[in-house]
Length: 170
Image (cartoon, rainbow, N blue to C red; front, side):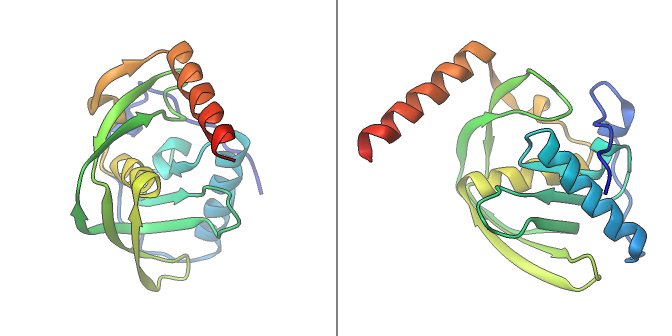
């Protein structure tokens, strides 16, 4: 496996619609493995193929909570409902964070690395991460959806406050 270069904005590949994957082979499996390793190395929870300079409909979400990574090839949104606003960042926009409204409950249909189809329902943060990565495949950047930018200092304070509240409940 290899660590790939993360493409940073304003590279035009980040704003183009990606091609449908039609070949499910060892090259695709290696790309998925390399994307996952790259995402972990860069402390991400999701990564899409255009972020590693590949204009194909491939994305991964992994919360590293003992579950298998969610590999999404040619994902489609099958159901969406509810709304939630939370803070997002992006590996292609280092140091930029902002509040983004997204659907809170989704169901997707996507393909596995062997080409077989599956369905997945997700809520909350998991749904947010999946939608963020699916947007990449359409050339949609999270910065186009930010309603309020958050500084690094504000983000650090929010994280510290959440950690303190969690300690109080334990």
